Every structure is written in structure tokens, then in C-alpha cells.
Length: 322
Image (cartoon, rainbow, N blue to C red; front, side, top):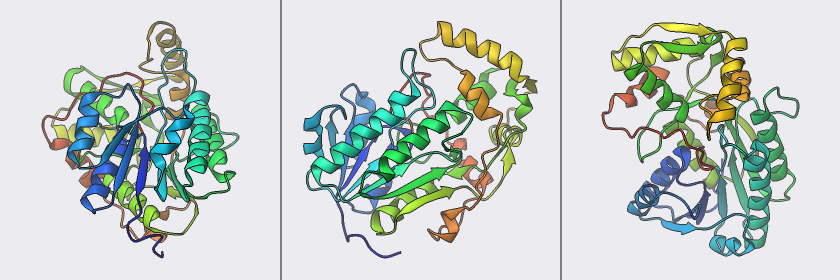
């Protein structure tokens, strides 16, 4: 892969999220000039962490045309805005498609040369889940923008190295493992995943920023495991063994309907049950073949959760949770 620019100014949209905070940390450590675009209502603790890295932090809304000024002089824009858990009254179409349309227009107005986007493995026009369909539609906005682009589709992202944010799914299960009497898994957790270490993903993003290559690439980790095996490994690492119970999809859906009715951010949704009923494995893992990154073993990635004192994730909607 050839150099796109020696030291391009990089704008990260969604910088207070899990991937965003790790990417800002990674790029800042490499000496790249970074500009973080965050929501006006972003938490001070999140923006303080970004500021501690020495990056520029700009509070702005994608829907405001003047926001394009925040991108002036940048060569690459990284799009990380998205959510698997929209709040009540907010749709995945708004989170993914509308935000991406605003993002693309903003990049065009600012003269951005290249977009790097993190989507999701499994995205497609006929995907069963709304999450994956709207991710595909967001990808299409980028592909049809006329700008250079690289789209990455990772499987489940795991591990924690920096910042205050963590994978919401993993943190939720860690909390259940720590305080619950048992661990419920939809259909017993028989769906297969290919979890990718957050460090490997940020290294791939770094390579994308420095490269003049373009296209859409699937990314996965070194191991294919069932959801049950993933949870069992987490319990082993935390030395807290709890019984796992299978939650039939029909019962899980009934619970999800109730949660969607009464909770501002449902702890589980019907769309998430669809996701939990499907495999999420790369057909062609580009992590090694395209980016030259040897995937980290799942065991090594999950070992990062042995570190004490990681913040408990609030089950609240954020558009920057990628």
C-alpha cells in the first residue's frame, strides 16, 4: 500500500465513541495531526480525554452547514458515527443513513479528498436486520459520493486499551458476569462470531488513512467462536463462572417488545435478537491479506479486560458508539 500523504490532517467524526477514542489515541501516538468532531452535547469526561491526547476537539452538528468549516485543511475524514441501540423515537435510518448523507455533504463542502468509514460485517441490501440494512445504505452514500473511500466491515470489536469507552455489548456481559446469578443468551449463544481486537482495527484504520487504496473490506480476528464460547472465555478471565441459560428467540422477542415500550433505550431490541441469531464471520478477512496485520488471538484481546477500574457503560443512546 502506498502513502496517501506523509502527515495528513485527519478528522474523526464520532471521536468520543469506543472506536473513535481508541483511534484518536492511536493517531496521536503516531504524531498525526488529528481533529475530533464531537456532538455539542458530548460528555465533558469524553472530550477531556480527547483533549488530553493533544488533538483538536470541535463540538458541532453534522446537520449544520457551517460544520464543514471544521474540516477545512483536512485530507482524510473518518466516519465512525452509528449505533446498534437507538433511543426511543430515533431510528437506525436516522442514525446511519441521514448522518452519513450529512457527513458526505460536509466532506464535499470542505474539499476532503478521502473518506474512511467503519461499517459492520453482515451489511447488505437484503439483510434481515435493520441495523445491517441501514449500514449498507450508509455505505452506498459513501460509495456514490464521488470521493475516494475505504469502507471497513469488522465483526464484533473487543478489547480495551485507552479512553473511557468500551464495547457496549462486552461491557454489558461483563456486568452480568460480575453481578448476575446467570447469563442469558439468545438461542443459547450458538451463533458464530469472529471478534477483532480494537488494536488491530485501529492499526487497519491507520493504514487506510496513509494509503491511496480504496474499496470495501471485511475484517475479523484470529478465532471463530460461538457467542457462548466468547462469554465462557470472559468468565474464565474474570474468574467468575455463572450458569448460561438459553433464551428462545420467541421469549427474547416478547421481552424486547416490552423493553421497547417502556425503556428510553431498550436493553434489548427485536433487531438485536435478529443479530444474535445470525453468524458474523468474514468470507475474506482483509486484516492480514490486504493490511498486513496478523490478527491478535481472542484470548490475548480479552486479557485486556483483566485491568481493573474500567468505567461501567451506561445503557444510553449515543451516536458515537462505534
